[in-house]
Length: 90
Image (cartoon, rainbow, N blue to C red):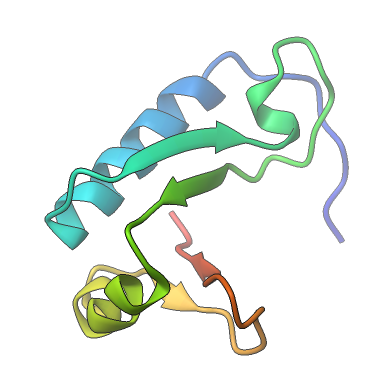
């Protein structure tokens, strides 16, 4: 069970590292945004960094699935048809 914790100013740096890791693994210039409660200064949150990534198409992500998996970005089994959900434990 994940609990809420006080805001950690280091979350913005953790986001930057995760975004850079994803962009390097994908070899892309996608737009990556820090979303969710950890992106709001001063707000208590589950200590999980959420990223939203704008890509050209879902097919683009599907084509890179093996490359992303080798870098630790694994697909969530059940996901919406119109977008992909990947996770990486740091």
